[in-house]
Image (cartoon, rainbow, N blue to C red; front, top):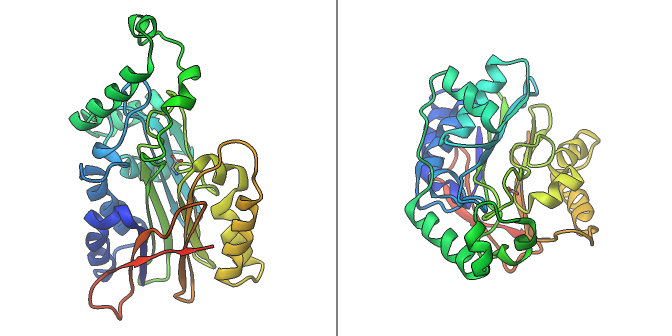
Length: 305
Ligand code: GLY
């Protein structure tokens, strides 16, 4: 068994450990744990505590991958839904599809009995409007929300409100490896923007034969490099975990056009190794780690690459 998650995961990390110890599958343990993160308003990049799009609407993304079957379920730009990781898991288990988006995902949530959630946390609404109010001219405010938004996107991008996410990677008692992600995405994103968290191969990937990888922060980069799949594929081709990460990181570092920002890679292999590295960041970032010889989960620091 092993459990690895990013710094946002604290609210659900021990819950996933308990489930793994009790013999639950990695998919079930990780989906249940991430649900606590989605519900925690202190986590300002995921679920209820996350940030809305430019129109002040919460649109969340999530992905689930079962590394034993390589089954995947994802949802993207979903309105009015707190537990998007659980919804992605239902897509994986109930439908012949891999991804549902927007109102289609919400319709599926209604059909299978998910609550319709009020998602805009009052503090997120306050910060969103203050930011937009300071940027728009009186004329633009007069036409809002029909104001053209694309021209405001550059100015409204706020590096302090990172394109963060929560990612859980785990191996259960049978050796099954899974990865689960959930996010509200880039703060003040253009409506309909989808990041890497629901994109298998970019924001997450798992294969119980080799390992798993998941990314946080700038999905606009990992989608261009298929980062998570590149790492697992590297291990399939015989690279060590560290060398597979280095190879994928080299591809990210070679990008010199488009939006360039911080990327944090979390990865583990079937031999019990794990590594968390951050690119284009300042200093290190924290992450959570547990394996059965540890009395309690530990908060550790990533390594720059
Ligand atoms: N990595 C999260 C996002 O780009 O939305």
